[in-house]
Amino acid sequence: MRYIYLQPVGGTGEGILHYLCDRLGRIYTYPCRIAPSDRVPEDTYEPGRGQYNAAGIVEEIARGMPPDAEKILGVADVDMYAPGTNFVFGVAIGNASVISLVRLRPEYYGERGNEPLFKERALKEAVHELGHTFGRGHCPDVKCVMHFSNFLEDTDIKSADFCRVCLDKLVDRGYVKPYAPERD
Ligand SMILES: [Zn+2]
Ligand SMILES: [Zn+2]
Image (cartoon, rainbow, N blue to C red):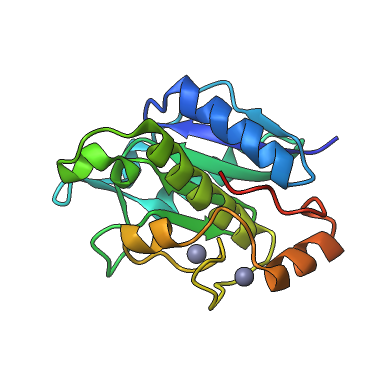
C-alpha cells in the first residue's frame, strides 16, 4: 500500500491535519497518513523577509519521504515565498509539495476568525498542490481547483473540486476517485 503523506512544518495543528487527511483520502485513490514528526528546515528561513523559501521546504521534505509515500504534502504554519514573489500559497516539485496556512486565515487580514472558511481554503490549496504532483498543470476554469491562485480571492472563487476535464484525466490515470466530492 502506498500513501499520500502530510508533513507538518512549523507547528501545524492536529485539527487541520486530520481534517485535510480525511478529505484528501476521499478525493485521491491513495489513503492519507500524517507524518509523525514536525520539520522546520531552518536553513530555508530568510531573515530579511521573515519568510521561508517554499522550494527549500519542498526539497527538505522530499529528502525525508517515507518509503511507502507516493506523494508528500507539507502543511506549513510558516509564511513562504518563492524568488520574485511576495508570498506563495503553495509549491510543488516532482512528488513533493507544500502549502502554507498562514495567509489562509481571515485573522491574517484583520478579519474575524472563520474556521470553516479557513479549512475550506486549506483543502483547496492541498488538493491543488497534490494535483500538480499527479501531473496536472494550471487550469483556465476559474472554478476548478487547479486554477492558479495569485490572490486569496482566486482561492475563494474556485471550488475544492476538479473541473470535468481535469477530473477525467486524473480518474483515467487512477489518481482520483471517479466522482467529484460534493461541495460544502
Ligand atoms: Zn498551482
Ligand atoms: Zn480544471
